[in-house]
Length: 163
Image (cartoon, rainbow, N blue to C red; front, side, top):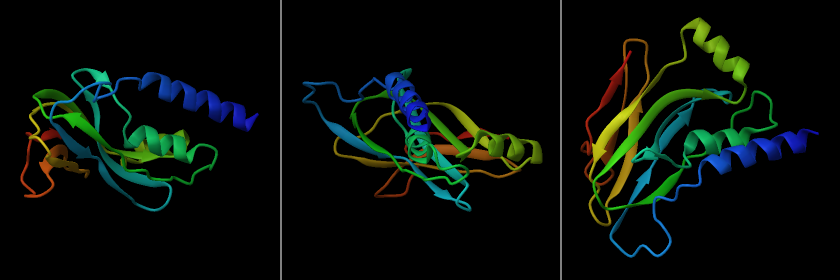
């Protein structure tokens, strides 16, 4: 029964993420975007991810971590995603948030005021062969998420800021 539930969840998650940033047959210039994050204590983590491109949802660290953690109770397995994207202007949706393996843990963290999240859209124009990383910060006074050039450490997008 447990395996059937895990299979259904994985099917639903993968079924929603059918958009491929690099379509079959694409031969144009590409760039790499890598999510980031870290575990806080084995049950809760901070993740910063590219979640959609031009309104199309893509596989990201939130989904991959949820799939990897399925069936492990409160234990969270953090998976950091990366993907190739066209080196062309796009509207990128970014998300920075705490995440947990168990929904009840997320609810308790929200009630305790220790679960922070920020999300929004930015214009992003990756350079051919560029390497980028989604960065962010989560804290009580304000949270932010942005994309930065992995080689220079300079922001490649504006910061999405939230409380």
